[in-house]
Amino acid sequence: MTAPQRGIGALREFFYGEDIGQATIEPVGPITVGRMGKWRVTYEVGTRGISQGGGLRFTPPNGFTTPQFEDVTATGYCKFRCSNGNVSLVPSLVEPVLGYTFLPASLDLKVQGSSLLEGDFIEIEYGWTPSGIPGVQAQFLAMPVEFTLSIDSGGESNWELLLDSPTFDVTPEEPSFLWVTAPAQTVAGHGFSVRAVVRDCFHNVATTGAFIPKLQLPDESIVPFRHESPGIFVCENVVLQAKGVHRLMVFADDLPSAHTPPIRVLEKAPERMLLFGDPHCMSGLCVGEYPKPSSAREIVEYVHTYARDCAGVDFAACTSLGMRMGEAEWKEVADAANRFSEAGRYVALPAYEWFGMLEQDGNKNVYFLDDQDIPKLDSRSSDSDHPEKLWKQLEGFEGRALTIPHHSVSAVIGTRWRCHDPRFQRLVEIYSCWGNSEASGCKRPLVNPARYDGQSVQDALEKGYRLGIIAGSDTHTSQPGFSNRLRLKNAWRGGLACVWTETFDRKGIFMALWERRCYGTTGARIILEFFLNKAPMGSEIKLDESAARKLKVRAEACSLVQKVVIIKNAREIHVTEPNQESVSFEWIDSKGKEHESDYYYVRLIQDDGEMAWSSPIWVDA
Image (tube, rainbow, N blue to C red; front, side, top):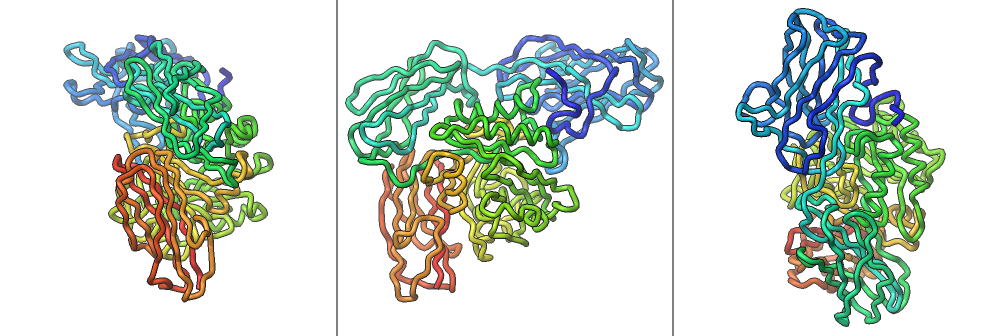
């Protein structure tokens, strides 16, 4: 490929160096996810040499065992040597720091005693053990990876990336289970498609095995799927005649059977359709894993292809860090949103992440309705380094831009809710693979240090902020829609944003988000409806103090519903435990008005731990 001027993503602050050398790796063949291995990386010094005090930095892929040099009996041990007998190599470990460092741990080898000259070489045996048993575990994510080498030629900590650092493939494990998606709604007698993906035990798309999944219809007839690409199958023109809710079984030889999420079959097309998406995905343009080597265009295309074909979501966004993208990369994000959006099939939202530390009131994703002439604002720039400055820069985009905070309870990059602008900040991401930000004591808490007091979603609602609720994955794997991996650790399963939209296109989805006709789940494709006096979730209504407040909840779950909770003003006021997949009930809040403005929302919990949260409904006196 043609190398960009600067490193992609986490390495964006580094330039590619010229005449700094070359490297090889042994073995060069693939390794299966999660398996043990060992590698010899040989770096040959280029014409510029390496001065005393300079060095070589060795960065394995994220998810591989952290390199270390102190304990030969432990995994990740690195044995190293230099061909120049006058040079000694002084090792140190560069550890990642959450919120500041966007690289995995790296091994630095500092050159002492003499300079390295052209043709000298440094050899690193990564995973060396005295017994010869491989001492490094490969990552659980299947994709091509790179052992990244960086060079400090002059000894001034000016690290330059080595062009064409060694790469090889990490391949999936054997097939383990089927994962099936289908539309939430259809019309009786009309055709639709069901998608089945074969996945391994680490949830990668499994590309081996001679499987042909089959779909069982309500009349017990069997329909085979069509092979679309390795591990991915589609069953087209499926027709259901009987109105009601269906959960269809899918099976394949030697794999456990699976079921579609609930499919609601209607007599006629509804006014609003339910779509599922993942609006939050880190990619190789900033701090995420991605197939290497890849250009910016290839990275963004990988994100949307995975979302559409592998995850089967209806919409997604590539939300790479704005501060770590150049204008060329941002153009690729916007152009891909235009190229991949296809009404009725898949929608790509143009977006990026505005990255703020706690003192900047946290992280926010910025979404646009349009994909042309849209600004990428840097959270390090003096005119956009605070949310109020960000919103000032977005003036003129009212109704066409949204800023959505996420993991608000993070102790490092969370949100203290010190500022708010309802022109743009109309939603909050309550959940992602980082965890749940709803309230103190919630299920699936944040996997990183958290401060729930004053930073939770309920705290924002209690301050009077009228925020609808969504969820997303915030995956750092370039794989939106079905992921549970952060860069530096495993995490919860990624969430989904669910929208009740009038049309299956970008405008319809964006307006459903704008209107707060949306909810979030922990990844399950739960159908959830919530009304107060017939007003849907996200509404603001006015009622006389004497007026009845009739709340209605309807849900179709992917497992038995353990509990449905109605929350009013941060308190649980009604709980039902239906223990069934289909839920429908009405309940009257006899206490009525508590404040000049009250809000209500619903939390649903399945027996398998999966959850959903509706957007609130606000009642003003």
